[in-house]
Length: 316
Image (cartoon, rainbow, N blue to C red; front, side):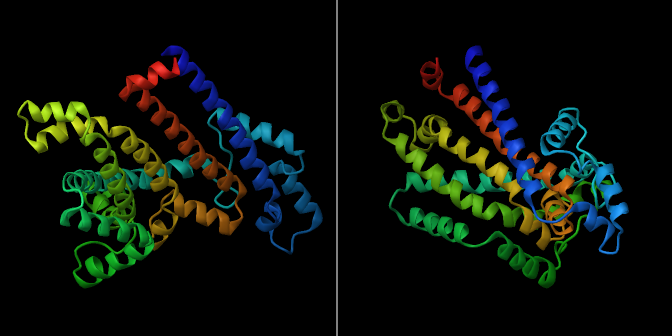
């Protein structure tokens, strides 16, 4: 098991390094000069050259990449060209909104999808299965930002129960913060619940007719107890896989929803950095998103090994 963990960790580190190089190279190829954008079109060539030297933009690409990578490894992500503050502080500040939003959306998605998928598998080809299928297809097809607009109209404009947008900050209290995140979390969770419902249903169907489930029924366990106690735990691997992928999507893919609800999260920060040509913020945010996806896949692989002993034997 230790040798497997060492190999996976080495693969994780190499992947992160390759991804960081690709991100830095692609960002460098984007048109436009950050120094020229900061100074404007009326800046003199001498002033422009001085700012380029101050920002290190006159250095060769390999030197700039190594300097940036060294700073990242030390926790120094550089300064924002637009805001003039450390990028690490910006990311942590925005993560305090995006991370709770993603966790809340994930909790809502699991709370709806897993019971729905299990019950659809129990009532395979029945009316409940058909209703669950319609819910899954519709929720996947409907864009999250459009769902967000409908939720604003229904629960903010018409009923006045929840705020239409903005974030008061966690200093205002837990409940005001959760109220501000509830509608965007529902908008994010709905498409993910549709996908997870199909995955849970298929996974439970695969194991419902296995010998250990039939043995549990033969021992006198009810259908529901046999499924929840024996079938569902053995159907967790595809569900865990999808949960890992969904969590990274909820964090990295919340750009539109955060803009619809005017939330100061990472997605909105990335959008603002792109529109302002703030390369320092852009490449650090993209690196954070990419590293999150890679690390989550790494953790999902470890979860596989912990759940299924057959995978540990195969890896050995």
